[in-house]
Length: 364
Picture 1 (cartoon, one colour):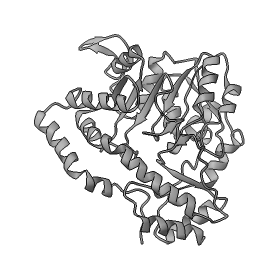
Picture 2 (cartoon, rainbow, N blue to C red; picture 1 turned 135 degrees about the vertical axis):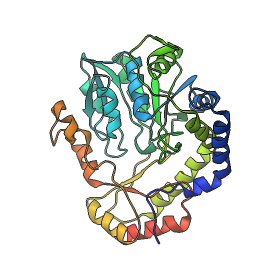
Picture 3 (tube, one colour; picture 1 turned 90 degrees about the vertical axis):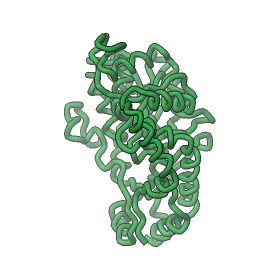
């Protein structure tokens, strides 16, 4: 049997007519930027995220970068984020001219360790970016308390966590603003690059929209040095077709994750830890093993494709040498990078396929 790391086929077969109709609707209308499809999706996604406003942008990186710029963060400022996130989180900070300040994650959840955040705060700190990594919500109560006590903004990175909940409340609705990616592989994915920002602050939403439209509040009138980052009509239409199915698709991922949690019994494997007050959406199901590379080879021989998130942490990336970090500065992030292996998980993965992966891991 061959098990891909991810497959879009079950979802695309199920939504084939809706997706094709979405394309035809936009194509027939001949309006491709800032039209009815964008407005429709923004309203629906804001409602889904329990926020007042949604601004469609070009991708998840831009969602974070524009949010930081709208908050006035720039040169001379510092922004705290986890050392083990995807590099886009750090890039969003440096693109504003600010400095990323890294902190170690919690080894059990892979998320930013809330108790390390306060140690990293200086007079230059302006914001915290909690990343709901792999679809697992961060410890938001503590993070919000730290932010309030130190007068800091909270910019949620929800790129992997569409629909995840912390204590019954959906992620993206906790901070001042939140950024989402709709990269095709996400739980809610477009058929190309796309992203969005959600917030309940109307002034912030308006500024983000202007910043993503060349800094313009109306045509040929530019109030900021902006960017070109807008959600196009075709991707908005595709996302509108998929959004009503998101909860069902997330529930299917939970089914698979629950099977993994119950079925994997190999003592060489450390399974994810899930606090009982969170509802992850399992964008990634990451296990840990001291024999990660050998396990990866073993599974590949069985036709099972896996991935590693992320084999080189941010502080050891060539492009961030200027931050001055070195090997050993973030031992938890480094351990995760050396031990984490992501198993196949996607909507429509059937029980035979899931059990095949479980058996192969238990045989290792």
